[in-house]
Amino acid sequence: MTVVDVEQQPPAMPSPRRRHLRWIAGILIAMLLAAGGFLGFVEYYISTVPEPGEFRVDHPIVRIEDLPTEVANAFVAAVDPDFYADDAGNVFNTSLITRRYVLLATQDTEADESTWRIRIMAGKLQEKYAYAEILGFYLNSADYGRGAVGLVAAAQAYFGKQPAQLTVAEAALLAVQLHPDRPQPEDGWKQVLDTMVQHGTLGKAERAALTFPRARNP
Image (cartoon, rainbow, N blue to C red):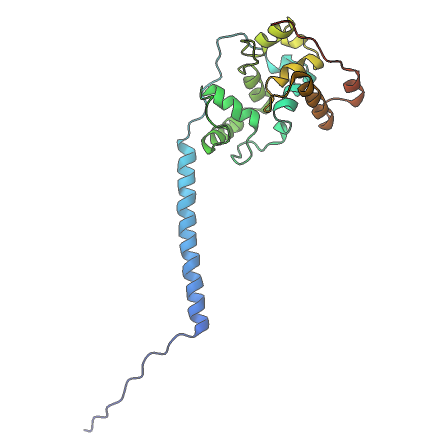
């Protein structure tokens, strides 16, 4: 029998187009794996961040439902005008009021309120409580100056009143104490009222009729 030596042909090289598709597929798979790992890390990190402790203070408080709506809105206008528009539970869009309360609740007042940890805690808080409740938590634990912590003490220190007796003008002046930029009292008072008008929580005619209130001497 005659043996014929058949020369083996080298395997055909994949076409440039096929190589390009394989390269793209490899990159996509790597990106999906990396994304899955990142999301897993984020989920783990969020789950390990504790929820702020239960709201507890050792001084008199006022229920938010006992405040006139305009009085409560004055503080919102001063600190976070978009408070009620923020998405509950969204760590990317937690309200400044909620984050400020988290700092107070955790007694970590030196921390940066914009850090991820604070935002996550705020998001968990917004998932659990209504916005009005969170506003009440904040107003009852904030420092208004003059040694007054909480709205009850502040209303007494500045105007000798209970919070429910405050006028819109008086509430706006107290709210300046919580304003992120801490403007001068009268300038800040005007800003608060103008913001209320812009957001539809105070009428223009009512705003025009208000005069700057005089607080008690320290």
